[in-house]
Length: 94
Length: 289
Image (cartoon, rainbow over the protein chains, first blue to last red):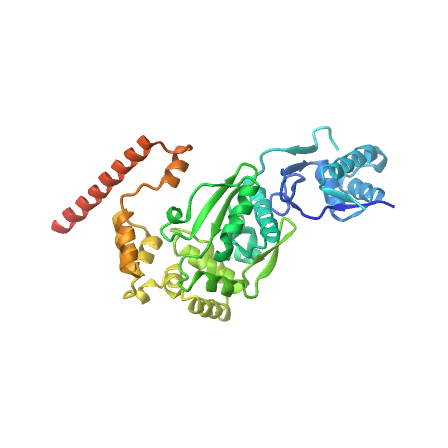
């Protein structure tokens, strides 16, 4: 079973860390080359779910709870986003 | 989830940029075998920082003998040097690098007020360093006592700063005693006194006038007089005198937003001379009235 986690050498910070919790937002970069990436709204929720690590189903379930959405309604979006994050090196699939 | 949500690149808020810059500098340092400590802002313990205050740059203290390696690493990823150590401040302790994505990093080889050798001072501050997570990357910072001392020494040259007051007033007697002991080890007692409003205890010290100037302000003439008095050797005094009318090319570049031309430098030189003459005139007329 493939699991996902934030890749090594990725620096990231969320608005929560910055005491600015107006809406879900995180900024991440693969060090040392970057570039920095902004993860806004639901992308940030998926990111936070990936930060806990897990299978695609676990990430989907976690995101659905945070987004107050039906897992079935967001499954394709979550999967596509996680795949994109893997492709740009911010997330590692093991 | 909405269609507007997503992943984008572009400008980040300064707070996020500072966090990521600390993490990136740490990564570069590890890869290049560079010893450094992260200072202030997100590198320091949360209860030492007044709520709601954010840094605008990433401050690091590098082991002086590792400076050239750090500079090479910074420049390898596109950081550009904007000020050098000689012109960065009266203490010649730091230089700034700028990156369009990561913002400012302020590289220190010493911390103003510390008067033992830079390399030795680094070892003292690095002893017991704490790994402080910044942007989820472990970044070494001085221990709590070192952090508090760094804040007070910084306040000593920051007119109107209340950051150190916040941390110092929350420290108990034992913690304050540890900070004073560390200041003694680093021979930073005069600067510590300036940061704590106790500078009059060092009225006869050669650096008294300099710390009074940087902690309370004054004219450029006052500054040069204080720097001359604090200069430890005749050679250091001669170098200072030579620099009195020299234009700070780095500051002028930042002010203009472009490299200064020869004409810019000549104009600024003339302005400095006129300003010095005005200050001198005011001083003389003040004394004779």
